[in-house]
Length: 190
Image (cartoon, rainbow, N blue to C red; front, top):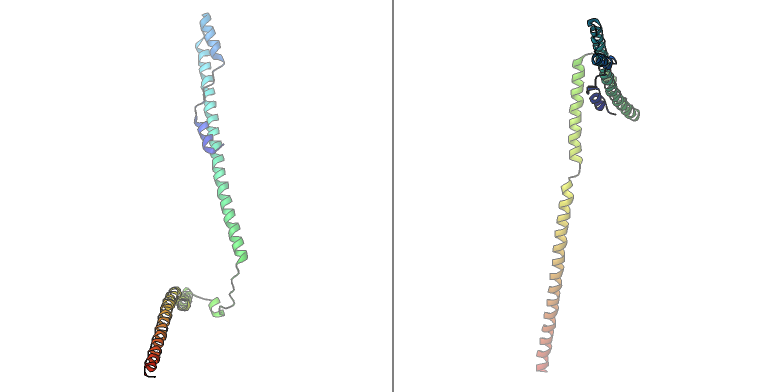
């Protein structure tokens, strides 16, 4: 049962318990017996006490439910914190930082100004290294452009070969016709 359901149950009004003396009082009235004022006052006081006890019990139940819900919230928060700490511990166990490359001068800084100066120096160096990396990184579009140019070159080379073949065929045909004409011309004079 969730805490909200518990709260709803606790907030519902419970029917007031009937006084045990209520039916007796009715019987006395029905039988015609009169009660004294003192007895009536005592009965009213007892009824009030019972109502107060019931209200106190209801309040106690509400408080207990609130305590349970707050305990559940605290325990879930504690569980989340424990999980986070476990994750950080695992991360810390797998990562080791090597400080050997840092000079002794940088390890023992006396003032905040020295720290800021050295920190700025490291940040500038990081920017310089990133710039160098960007220059060294291959241009990804260069490969694509190369492929496009190579494709066009292959197309043009294919067209050139086709035209060269056509030219050779035309030259061969021309030479055959030329030789045939020369042979026929020579045969006419023989």
